[in-house]
Image (cartoon, rainbow over all chains, first blue to last red; front, side):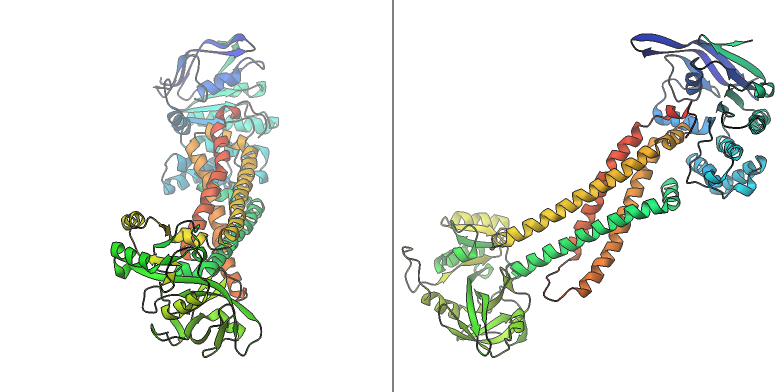
Length: 225
Length: 375
């Protein structure tokens, strides 16, 4: 089985008030095609750093990140932007949609930047909105959407360029239990159906049964319990 | 492009307000520029209209026509260097006249020139004046407002000489006063009646002018300067700025224009900087999902350009409208070249104003997007 996301021997340290702090210490993670991994851990355990490194937003002090077999080491900022655009789908804590774009425009923006043809983009937008039950909201602005709808738009945006890896940063944080379950179920289904590697950082234990694997971030390493 | 336009569509009120400010500033810039150009033209039209590249004046005359005196000898010497067809004598004298049949005095500038020479402006009404014979003059049409018509006799207060108006010329003025054009013979008569400067050692019968107008290349001008050590070769623009009142008038107007440019730059800079700070979390998200910084920079710059170009176009229409309701006596002149320069400068200044925001956009870190609980 192919691993679409590999973190190999990642160490990340930073200077904190004159002290050298090691946030991630020789961390290893292989997420295979269609697998959905949950990462738990107390505040300050380095979850955000872990996700930033996996998402090509932060360069680790040492170690290699491989997306679809391609290493991120030594890439320029623009190349990293392109990797994020094409290979990674981000889902943030709150939906973080662009307030002045209608639902379909949020998706069109990503498609345009990814260089997708307009007819193909329109087709894909229709397909995604249908799948996520948002067809009737395609011309709404984000402030007219409910919290759950917004998070679903964010998922659609993350899926727009058909990325290899889905990274979710506490996607249920701003939702009630039922909506949260819905959202996580959608991420799980997408990972499974389209053979993506999905990683979700979460505090929410209720959604864990939907994940294939649950890991805990402790002392800079990921361990299974 | 996609982002910039949709954001402006969404935040109509915000962008309309800034557009209105820009519109007013752009209007003021164009209007004051038109006024400055109009006054400049009204002031120095006669000299500006002359098809000369340089003027030969007396040394130490500070580039002023009225202070300078040159002899026929200088004219001939200049002619032998630059070619006799490329030099023309010019007399300038500011004086006060009365017109027969009207009350009140007129401040005018007398220009003495060769009626067949290339300094002679086009006659728009009445007849041209002959090279020989005396007593007939051309006057600027502004004098019509004072009741002067073809055939009116003008009396020079200082010399007591009388001339009959033979025809009118348009847009001929010097130091804001309308121009009266004499042929050489009349000019020399006037000159001989006026007191000669003592101690210049020039013979009474030698012809005296104020300057010699030259059509010369840069190289010829240098040759002239070498051949005429007692004279100064003055470029046309220097001669224009030395006209009494010209520099002072233009200086204050230009200060206003420059300040307007600075103001518009700052207004834009502040507006876009505040908006950019407000949107920094959005920009962070966009960068996190793979938007290149260059795309965001283009987006901000495009908004600035749309605002400044849009407000410029509308203000041009407003200025056109304003022009049609301005009173005739108000000098206003906005040639297309001036309009192009001013618009270009306005747009450039706007783009400079957006640089602060562009810098801010490049500093925003995509990392902010992770671990953020509210956007």
